[in-house]
Length: 115
Image (cartoon, rainbow, N blue to C red):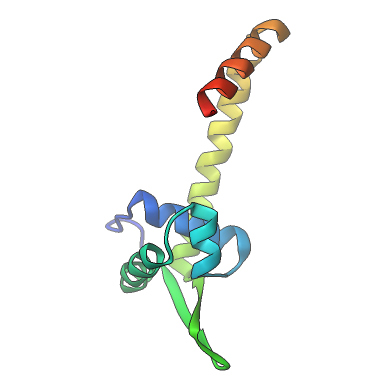
């Protein structure tokens, strides 16, 4: 099923957000990913066409749209999480090579870069 499925980085982030929460509405995804609701809506429409997500409007609120992952979306979410787990493990192994003092310097550098 995944052989010919191409997804963008934004689509991957949306899959991760929905997968981590079971389902989510556009406002929540937009806030989580620090983007606009319009961007989420546009990307979600493409994702729905690719059978990555399900779109559902609540009966009592026609404006609010909830998204959940299809079976294909869930498979991509599992692959994504697996890749992140492997990357974290590799990162931890690399960090073990540094002393506490060196790690503090690295932390200080990263804090500066993040500001």
